[in-house]
Length: 109
Length: 109
DNA sequence: AATGTTTATCGTAATATTGCAATATTAAAA
DNA sequence: TTTTAATATTGCAATATTACGATAAACATT
Image (cartoon, rainbow over all chains, first blue to last red; front, top):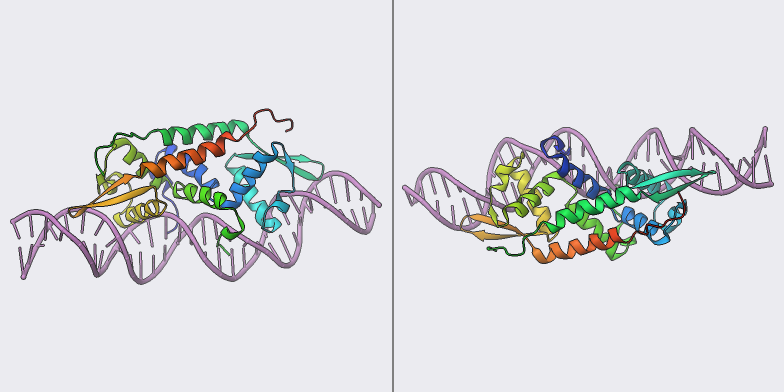
């Protein structure tokens, strides 16, 4: 097959998987780290930062946009990308909640 | 193509992407949530918990194992899976660090 | 030893992802 | 208005992922 059976899982599980999927490529991690580093909207030179062709970068940006993690604002003939702080914070909490849920006093293994 | 150019990115970026990839499927999230919930090693009834066939679950378990997130211990003719606490903690920190790196006082967008 | 139980692996089909050249689109600049 | 610059989209090839039936492997039970 190759198609995920997403309807068999909870909304939460699908949400976590979707966020993780957006982060599941080094190029997209690099884009986000760059946006975090410059701490501002960046108009386009993301392409120069990455070792990938422009259409490929554009595609990764699109995926991050579709996941809601970044937004792009038109600014002249360039486009200004930045991280959506609300979504970023929401995602931070989702992962925090998941990772904190472990019980350190396990009795087996 | 379809093959990620991982050699062009930093170790850190590839690491984050690899962890995210392991979480990038609802079935694997469900497996982890189940292991967190029962707080013990679970021998095989993960298959009964998931709406997927046994070989498919086995494959997802393998991916989580390859990512180092879980480990499987043989117990009779069953296998006891559990979350590797050290790796879990390490991954928690990696995500925490990534998500905390945002500056709330942005000046544009 | 034969049988049943549990889990892994193989083989394969369907689908998704990654990457880029070519091209389109949009708006600024000349 | 033509040209230039910045992004997006299209189309396509290579590869990866997801899913499962069939089967194998390992061990327990009878």
